[in-house]
Length: 294
Length: 282
Image 1 (cartoon, each protein chain N blue to C red):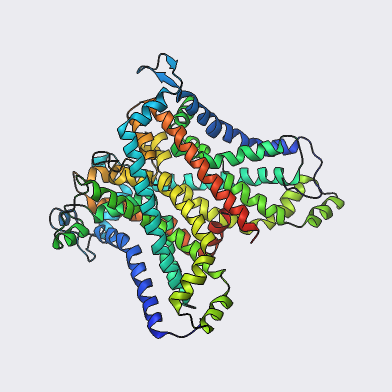
Image 2: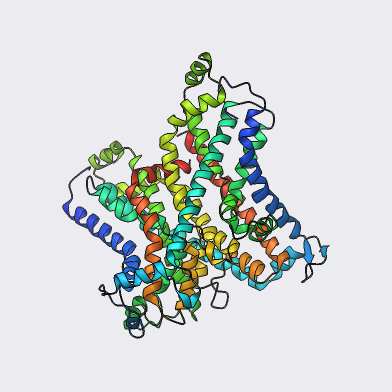
């Protein structure tokens, strides 16, 4: 690991400097994570008097449980939809801003602020717009013959949380796409233009491939966002319903463990989710290492 | 600009204007709703133009809250949110800048281990270890306190990595010169490294303020006493009740108030915000 050519010789000081970070990490991160792993192998009686070590039973039960498998499927649909929608909209907006010289800054300001909106607030905003009795969108949809009700219709509920989550993530993706586009050398586009390539051809054959590191990075970040940071959005809009149709994995950990008090099963779900985060983080960091060589 | 294509310029502006409208629409409707009286929502659809009850609605939520849903006055919740966000900003930056300093400027046994322990925190978001973390905080008697709201959130791998990256780019000569002049590690940190890190600290503060402000799950778990409610979680309580007893004007006034501080920070410090966002992901 990298360090400085010359260093300070102190023996005790570095430990003192690291102490606060280490204490908080051990107490509030590592220890609870260890507890989650431990109780994922145990069964606790409802009163919490005794626990029993049961090996992988919590896990095998989970994979035989249709409601968990349903949640896995719902999470996949949700994460893929959010990633695709918010990334394509942002890419389109970033390309547009990148074409402009002076006015680009104003548009950027007008597009980035949803980053600061809390997921739960984003949820409430869209929930209000889609409210079946007073919302403006169900009113407009009724002219198209669509009877919107996300309280009973699973498809509607999923659409609602996908839109709310994508809306909030647009600003983040937009900023990274703009940064990515600005690092693509202008000379390449110019050379292609001289060879007679039109704007669309130039984009698909030159700019988009050169943008692939940014696209890949954003893909990972967006999947991560959709799987873990959308808790508030879901809690504010559908609370996992109707009939479990929007009960994504992270919400299920909460509802099974905190509301349903099924500690063993919830812990096993936690451990599986940690596995997913670890895989995503490793992929993300390998990408960063590759980019350094560019 | 490679070539001049007027129709493409028109299309560009159309796309952007449409984008801005989509981004702003939900907030516009919320603002409009917050300016009407309660009766407008009993039937039909949401009005599209501002109503006359702006000051009245905002005054009511700020000073009285919503008694029907047990929400305390918003002024109180706004103060809690501000306090929570600021403690997180200061806490995260202080503990990560000193640990980055230890990792970069010293060589000691267990250094690599410390680095990995910090790295692991990236892989353990609160959302995946809700119950055991809650238990730890409860056992420590930190429920319903500002300490419980903030301390478990202030360990941060991203901030530590950001400072580590930055320290590695600081020329070695600075430190050698300081040592020749007889400066010890603490003096070097305070008089040279800290001033050099000013921009990074500022950029990171913007990002962390937003991070602290939009926390939802954690305050929801550790606070049961309305005295400690933050605005983001308080709104959720108001909105849940609104579904059966529509006071949409008040809920939306609260929503607008909850958005103003962080959105203001992003817009007013856009340059630092963009820098912070891009740097923390490296």
